[in-house]
Image (cartoon, rainbow, N blue to C red; front, side):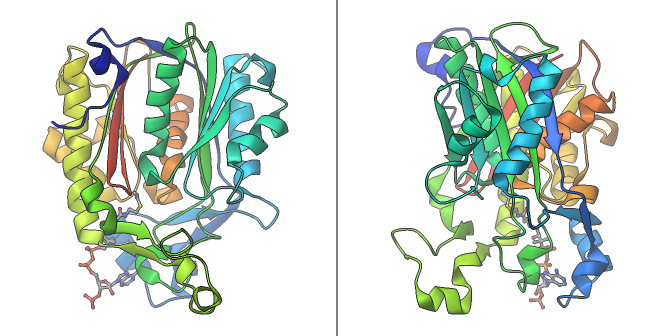
Length: 341
Ligand code: ACO
């Protein structure tokens, strides 16, 4: 498989092992069902369920923002790790729906948590692959000397997409997930990560208005173009299945294991049919694939850490298990991480 831009490969050395010290997650209280959507746009519970497996999703309250959701997940991850914000050496936030345009969400989060004046930055624009990419960056930073890195995946999508576009709006939900990574300790080790990008497919999933190519204008405000997610659903579907399956195979091979050794795959939760197709392509039965897309929809960068946090809390993971995280996102990006519990 092409495009394996990892530190270990560049150095021609063994991948540096980093550890996951704590897990956290957050979902807003408000539940929006498929029937709630059907009351707003021309859709139905049957259509959404059959095409996506989604039954409901969470919607942020008016007083919630990307920052408040990030902070909730981050505090739980720190608590789980038995650490405080002062223990952090770095903060990375993966999101496509930041607190404000500038500065990044991580700046607000550093202050909100009461962390020291450590490097804090967003990994933005990678769609739903952002969190696993950020885990890859975190392990590189740990190899360079950072002791403890907070990695957050967060999305408050409901406020930023076109609510009248049934083809995209019904797919998404709001959430945050987080891990604290470190040099040693904790329950799990990140053995290796593979990641790649095929920018020739940028147009299959894109929000065009608001950047330098198409700056935000009064006309955009009038037509709502700044909220229009352009998505070629079928091509995204195909790419997602191909890239996530290949990334899983690749990352387990890199750590000297096979797909049969995987105890649990935690895939990006975009669509149950995509998840099923990845399982089928890999020859992995349903019990070894974690699914919560029915309850939360596609929560973008939050989806993998949220599912991981839930899987750990629900005892779907035991010590000794090999867990593989895999994600794809706008870009087109993909990534997979092999995590040994
Ligand atoms: N309710 C009812 N009908 C709908 C809805 C809806 N919510 N949305 C679209 N339709 C209609 C369309 O208008 C179209 O109608 P037409 O045939 O009359 O033109 C028809 O349904 C589309 O049908 P299909 O193309 O057969 O739908 P498909 O089976 O491809 O499912 C879907 C569409 C769910 C979007 C699918 O392609 C998919 O999941 N693709 C991947 C999308 C995805 O994962 N995006 C990720 C977003 S971001 C990320 O995770 C990185």
